[in-house]
Length: 111
Image 1 (cartoon, helix red, strand yellow):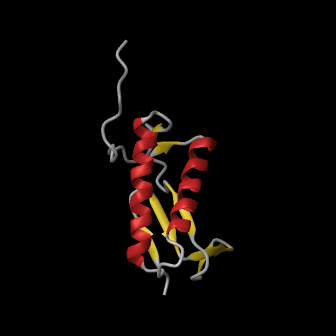
Image 2 (cartoon, one colour; image 1 turned 180 degrees about the vertical axis):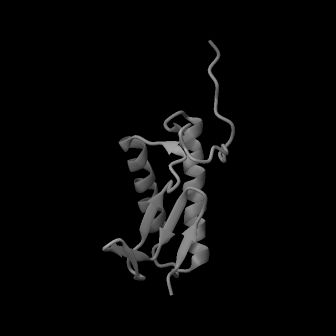
Image 3 (tube, one colour; image 1 turned 45 degrees about the vertical axis):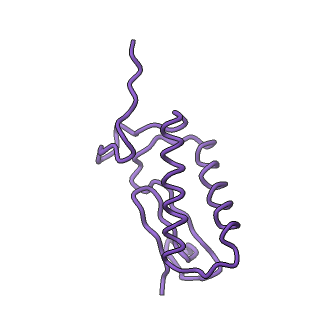
């Protein structure tokens, strides 16, 4: 059975990607960040997400791999994305197919 956690901006799978297919594995976690391209990312901000993911995995080492535990990690990453947005490190992609400002209204700098 494929264990997974899917939130609005984070998808975590207990699987590895082989030939564009997810192959279930309990010893590998695959992270998909912002699959709907709601945000504008740069390499530095993406690396922060990956490092935070690694930290959360290490913090949960020895804990049973369950969908609940994956959801907790996904939720923590969602909060981290919100902090990157609020600090201005990432921004909304105004060309995204669905503008819903799921992390709060964009900040507008007065002229």
